[in-house]
Image (cartoon, rainbow, N blue to C red):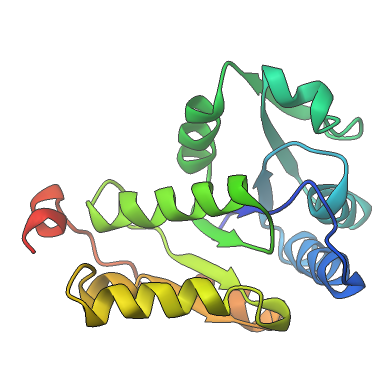
Length: 192
């Protein structure tokens, strides 16, 4: 794994554990020589993550929509900052640049990015591993909803397995590195 796309919040959340986990993940990426691809913000979880990678001597590419460059305060220390026209362009470029995906706690944008990455994998548009860093059970309700969708026949069990989940950043990065993605076709995702 040469690059990891991380979806996370431009807020730090209420628990200091969230930003601490973002910093641990960033330090691990820098130590492993894995480039960070992320949303380009300099505040909240995004800022903590990018700062840790940069402080560890790692490589960071930020991808931020023009309209959010001011609102999310584009990270001033990120030399490779790509300003794109909109969220659709952001997600597509981050997906192109990354070898794998991870979601940390975040808001609606984080959930949108995560679910789109899973949907693209389901449809066979990519075969990159996808992980969730589930801190303090943050993603438990989402995982319960996905499991409910499987039980009700709306999500195939194989599609549920597209998502690697761990509460430890080091273990999750190791799992993503070891993951062998099975290429799928668009038709595989539609045969349900």
